[in-house]
Image (cartoon, rainbow, N blue to C red; front, side):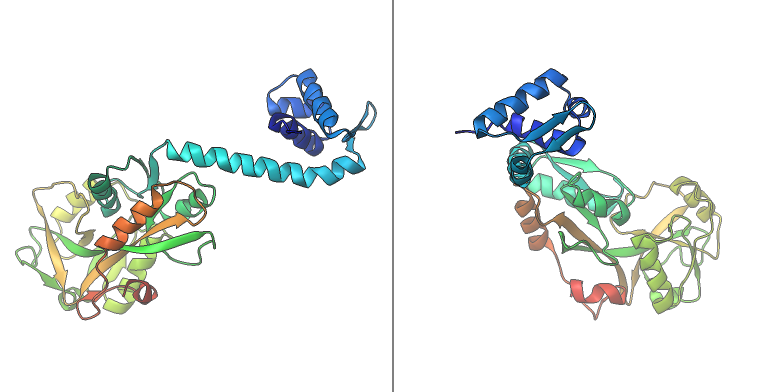
Length: 310
């Protein structure tokens, strides 16, 4: 005897809805088609699975109640098998936060090195990546990890990105080839896009506390171009940009490396441990092979990141 999975699925939906009409709507079938599937399943099993009543709807028989958990298990296995095959035929879907950040460059390098097809997804960082990884709407994500992750989500150190200073050409530091953290201490960086609760806002809170550089998050934030325009006129405040960030060109703003120590932004690769996409191990290997660990003598990261990136 071989069970028809379509009939098994119809049984499970009827058992959950307790009504053939509601089950038919959910399955996208006619009520007659659902009835025929259930009748065929009962014939195959040589038993009655459902009591039918015009007044009280549908209920499970003792055999139906015993069969239900096994029917659900059969459908779970079938759905997982189908998902695994579908995953093999579609691009690797990776969340990068923004396309102008280093995370996109990391994906581009992976694509060029391996030829694995990828699809870029942008979001609001870790707050969106957590549920997206859990429900498998994305296969992987690049973000800074803060807080506790779901046990199904694994993360691997991916990249330590140096921070640079952005200043207008009228600023006293504008002609320097590099600027030390000590020279910035007591100064103010304007960062209106530091959204409360985001992983990057958390990073700059630690930056402010440990390195003595004030972070002004007052807004509103009208975009990078507006920030650069205001920056070009300033002689006292400054902003930050990551080394591989695609900063829009502006003639009166310069980008300068920060040293002693070099503040670095810790990017991690996150993925669902149970995800079936066959390209994920290749992505993990690529990231691990190209990762350079933290050098405490040269680099600074928030205390929460030091153990993972050393």
